[in-house]
Length: 286
Ligand SMILES: NC(=O)C1=CN([C@@H]2O[C@H](COP(=O)(O)OP(=O)(O)OC[C@H]3O[C@@H](n4cnc5c(N)ncnc54)[C@H](OP(=O)(O)O)[C@@H]3O)[C@@H](O)[C@H]2O)C=CC1
Ligand SMILES: Cc1cn([C@H]2C[C@H](O)[C@@H](COP(=O)(O)OP(=O)(O)O[C@H]3O[C@@H](C)C(=O)[C@@H](O)[C@H]3O)O2)c(=O)[nH]c1=O
Image (cartoon, rainbow, N blue to C red; front, top):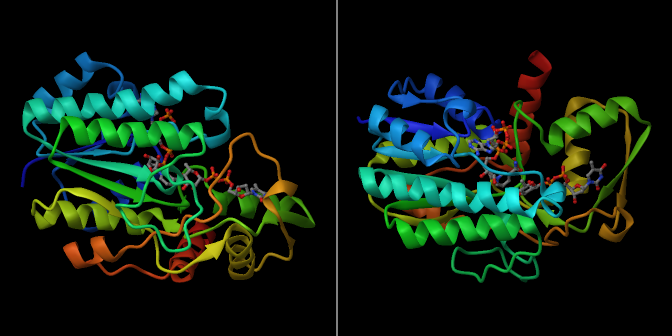
């Protein structure tokens, strides 16, 4: 099999891809460090594509600070839109397939049903808008793409809600957590495994796919599960969105329908609480 190159290798999902690729003994996968693989530097990209001649490129590089993006629009757009477009152009020139990771935050969050890939995207934050622009540029430039929208990523790596809850839970007696934003957490290790399964299947079912863990929850219930499984004594109090003001607005409902990815690639998706248990066990063992 030809080379796979991962951009954004030091981030949360990049780490998980490395972990899963090692476990699956996939050896033809390259993880160049960010300082040697800036997706905004087209000369650097050109050299990397010449050097590794990838058949597949996985883009995990992104501006993911949702609140900060509201005041840092130019940089968020550069990384989430221009960076994604740069990779698509390089892929087009060098005959590579691009696997790009996107987000549930491209949706407004007001549908009465789990979101399917063809539902209208209507972002309500700068992060969501710039991620959508990235998707649209890729689709325009490169038909050979997989855009995988995921939600509420967490793992033992990087910064994420699960690790924040464990940290705050150890410092405080009680925590107020939003209970009226509903979605599905995704263990980044499960997503990494799904991405590598799609690539190694070698098919050409290009397009947009939704992937999260199975089930539905709120941030409050997610936090409660984290505390229960970890044995934390902290008291979690459910609150409404307006009781926890944030710079960016987040979707109230961003549960995604995964039928397309499951049937196309024959993927089995774990239930969110089962995967959370696995992750918390790994964190405990660290
Ligand atoms: N985290 C989440 O909850 C969710 C994430 N997603 C999407 O999943 C993908 C992976 O997210 P996740 O791993 O959590 O994100 P992280 O923030 O952990 O990782 C993003 C990585 O991108 C790197 N990066 C930023 N700018 C550039 C650049 N110009 N060139 C190369 N690399 C760059 C960052 O490096 P540095 O740290 O040095 O800036 C970082 O290593 C992203 O596309 C994100 O939008 C989707 C849904 C949920
Ligand atoms: C820390 C904290 C957060 N919250 C709320 C705020 C917010 O609505 C929700 C999650 O907060 P966070 O800031 O950790 O997560 P956030 O950065 O909003 O997570 C999002 O990240 C981007 C990258 C995505 O693509 C999304 O899918 C989603 O995972 O929990 C509380 O209610 N109480 C708290 O103590």
